[in-house]
View 1 (cartoon, rainbow, N blue to C red):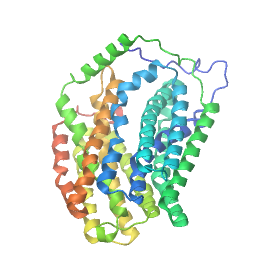
View 2: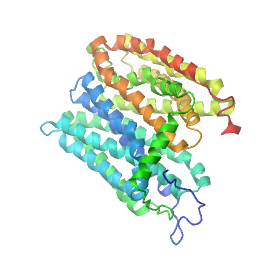
View 3: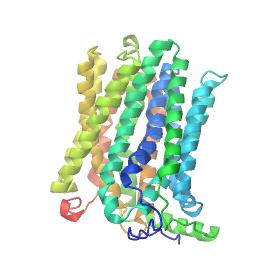
View 4: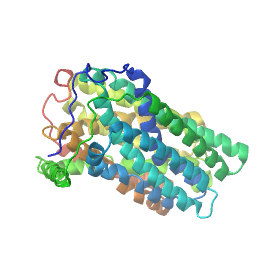
Length: 438
């Protein structure tokens, strides 16, 4: 079996060195974790739309970029076995910065779209590896008390990275489009500045990240590594209700997986093409700021509700919340309002419902992963979560182009019973999630 890293008490962790306060590195570490994911998953969609690609191409190409997060559990033991988590964090941040620079320099080169996609692939694999190392480092550098104490900080700065990416960076790119009047140049400047930001964070972390004493290299033989992986993998697929769990993890967000790739394209497309004709900067406000705030508040409300009454009581309301607000896009596509206030309210409602309903998904992953090898099993769940977003997203652009925006959103609403069906099949112990049981 793979040797599990332990989390000893705080006193010996930094013996002989001046301790580094968690506030000095946790905010920047989780900002650096969130920003590349947002760039790959969201900003790339807007960028390629502004560069003239068709919706089917954009949805297919950017959905493939989910793959590193789908398969990252397969190489997470390598991050444990080779070097240290600190080394992996710094190396991946430098690679992410270099990938962003590669996107910036490749956009105006011959075959620039293909080159930029290659650099996005490198960024995606680097970002997924950074996630593994950062989460492991968090558990190594802090004792259990400090881990619990600072969990709010890490999630808050991950959300700030989301707002900074989907909101501020997108708005900045929109301003650059107006200023330069050349979309390729505007996005090259945006990606180049983002690269400098990531490289600056890497330089900062070189100086400030602590060096936990207990983080040592593990000299595992390959047969031990693969034997442990095989045992962990087979134990996951022998869990009770595994087929129900697979259906839930892959299909609970099926309608949302279709919407995610198409919504920014819908906002950007002109009215005569069925879209809303927003500018790039306006999309940054609508999706990257108002939408993210709604998503965050919905998630907070979901966590409070479950802590008070338990998961089972709130499952149906959460299914309703993640499904019914999708109808706002039918309203937007039918009436095509020009007022930004109406669009913002609609997106806030949908994202608040998504954040509230997504709480059920996260809690079920925790519930299903319980028992031996829970860390590895949770990683498998997150891989299935990414797969559930990747596969529908690949077909979303083709479906939208074949049917138009209004009919596409109607089809999405017609698919919401899938969410109700898979949610009705899961079985969760009474009281799971209530505060006294957390």
